[in-house]
Length: 144
Image (cartoon, rainbow, N blue to C red; front, top):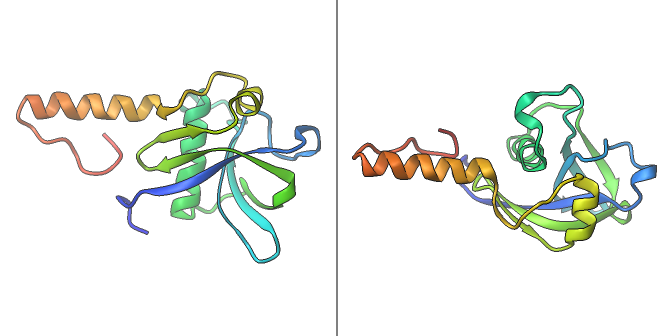
């Protein structure tokens, strides 16, 4: 998978948050279910208080980056599919969220989660538009 290739990931929340080892409010993404009915999920809960992971969309994109690029991490696990509920999709690295179960997702996230581009993706597009208006091409890829 190349860095510019768009990948659609599933956004999950635990079916029973009280029984989950994933920290409440974590961004949780997965790609496929294996032959045993388990979903490999990557997550980010900002347990250490990083300033760039305060919003849910930031945690979600961080978890997605780990999954797509296969970063070594302990913030992943194989979970039985019946222990998860899919609540939307995330297109990575574009940063487009499509919510399919808003009440469940927002209860888990602890904040509003709008459909559309994440705030960081909107900022990137704005930055690239300004650079193009000035006659300077923006950098390639998802970063600034």
